[in-house]
Length: 300
Image (cartoon, rainbow, N blue to C red; front, side, top):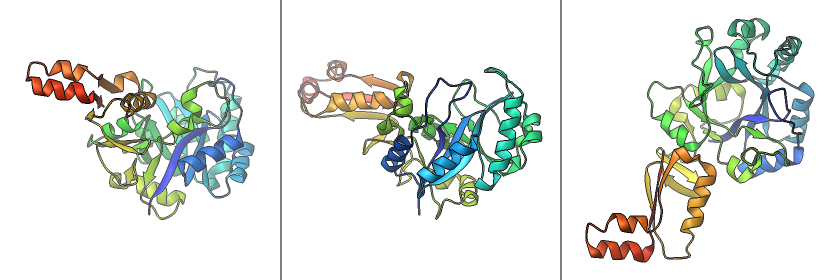
């Protein structure tokens, strides 16, 4: 059986966020559209117990895990815990608040382990491919650790690296209809930023065990490698040639791809450029290319 999970959703703004407000209707709509079986609530440097319980009430058929997005001195990490560790998260969050750390001050791994009881129980997601990426600190080497990535292309890239952490994909969404950042509230984009796990149920322990086996983690239902899904289309992470007559939607599809990925992730050869590129070959090739208006795009 396969379950679909979003490991990283924001529901409460903190000192590291601009203001936004939790919208239960947005979250219900997102969970339904993305067909999520479980989610994790990971707000910046805080755990709000009343908000967490409200989300559990709002999503009675979805497993909701407590967590926190934490800035350690060594780097950035999202940590998810079983529900029974919620009181420990409350205590740790209160300690964090009492320190008046400010926006740029970070917590040492030693302080985290001292003030977060049962820290060994968590699933640790160390963000990969970012400036604040974090290698697993020596103190945390015994815990369950995976690598968080921002999109499907980065998932496939890190999946192929033999010694890299097992990648997982998450939305980093803000559960708010009126969030000023489109990438944090656009459900059509966010529903493609989730992870599939080969598990029978969404118990914390089964998820944790599954993450230790890279072969059971994927970003599509068929667990295909070197492909990504864009609005029900399977696309290669390498070179894709998009062929069709005028007016068949090639340009719209290319624009859709650009909504999902940053400029540095893609290389596009626009229509007609493929025709000009093959002029040196023979006229029949040129005529064929010009007639069907080819476009090519390389992903990754």
